[in-house]
Length: 285
Image (cartoon, rainbow, N blue to C red):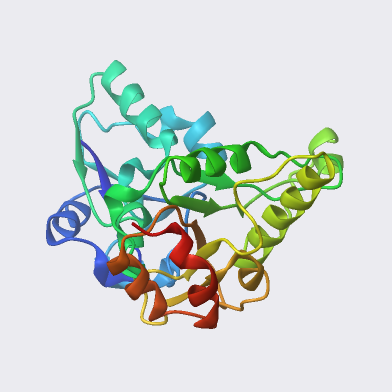
């Protein structure tokens, strides 16, 4: 049996009882280590689970999946995922591979940022399409995520923005030369994401457009959701570009039309309450 086990969002103890029982009876246990991170390290998980964990990076999961599934038809193998197992499409691919090999599988779900984001007070059914904001480079500055945020906002919907993670990435030079040298891990912060959105707004105004999202659009920054040191900050997009929320992982929400109860909840986390008095009332129902 292949078990895909969600670990939740905080620390080692967030695994479900069902998930922990599955992990403890498995012969091999892999820890997916590139779509998200917990606030504790591999050693803390091993101590709590009582099992040795094998780190599974992107290369292993995408290029060596057969070795990961080896013998899963005759013994139990677990694949641990921060959040919920189906928070990333890579894990659907793993299930499809297992089915083709005749390996039975079981999914043990857990909390993920997709539902825990409700901690800020915005109602989950008022969210539109989730988007990913990627790190820009000097030569690559995509804007497709901005268009999706605008479309959600035009429909009155909030947008959850998942922020880029760079783990075990190679520089272009090392990649071209085939050198297995990796860059230090990088995790996008709320203020970095806000700065990129502000840059797109400025660019589009220069092109004669009137963006649906402006510097005064109410947004929410979240950090380490589910952890003891979770942080939430609400305010304008401009304020989000300067807010400091500490260590990763961060997420950003761009609000749409807000119910009065949503607005009252967001005020609990406001950077400056005056930003709500001046702006948010224009987008409530």
